[in-house]
Image 1 (cartoon, rainbow, N blue to C red):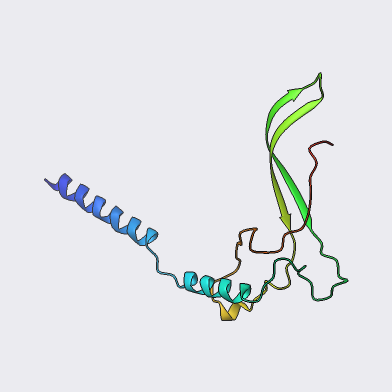
Image 2: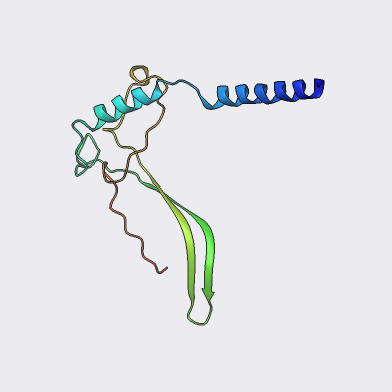
Length: 124
């Protein structure tokens, strides 16, 4: 009988701990929504994001090889699966963190912001 009480207590304790970990109140969602609205209010994705039109935008390009799918030595063809990462600074997408507590970064769909016009060729 004591083993059943101990097991029941352990299960209830586990459920309470799991619930407290999974259900956390946060106001970050509200701040993120407001920040999205504020940043995109006068944003034009067709304009280069620079204060001075003659300024260059430095774009970092990274590629991570995920998988080699096929190697055809005879035809000199290599088929791969890779992850491409582009990063740059968009001067129009900056904010004061004190106005949006807890929001350290945002992710935008590529169709909502300016994206560098970069074309990668399949051949090296």
